[in-house]
Length: 224
Image (cartoon, rainbow, N blue to C red; front, side, top):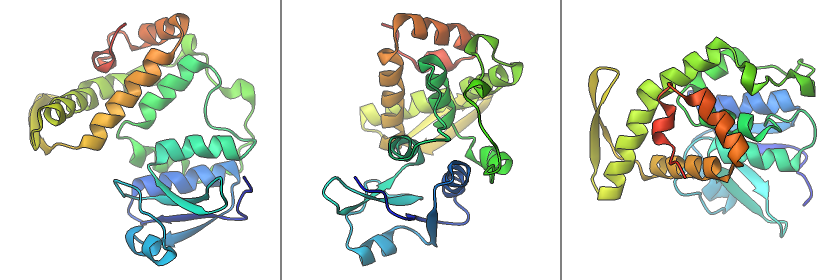
């Protein structure tokens, strides 16, 4: 597959996930053009099939036949870019650490991420910059505890509602009753998280379990 000279990105200025994608492209030194718009219109104009569900950002890639294909969802897009572009990779090579990275990435902290990392193109990364999972700082555990307290109950309640065919769900989150529309896509995210967890070796899964113990995050992981 030949790489386009400049990656085509479509998204909104107010979309934190669009800003997250642009920050990643700057860091990785991947050239891009940005179209500030909802992907619906531009993809129609290009005659491209729209991803389902469609949300911001959309990134246009060449497919294996040389045609164009639009993809949404920053998490799989980041992984696709890892396979297309060499150097300045953002995914850990340690499988256990990579799982924690994935867990953090699908949690709702994109705004804070963008605020801190909007343009890190001048950083010169080294392989030994990755942290050792067994020496994880207290700040990482605190973030995992926040995810376990507010994100995990929402994910589990949403998955139960989707499985039952219910349109909405409610749950006690951080001491407050929260009601929200059920999202099938979020249920898929929970399923994917478990698939990645189960794919870990017994040793790496054990390392993850030690870090997550007491954070509340383990409640959404199926044990073998």
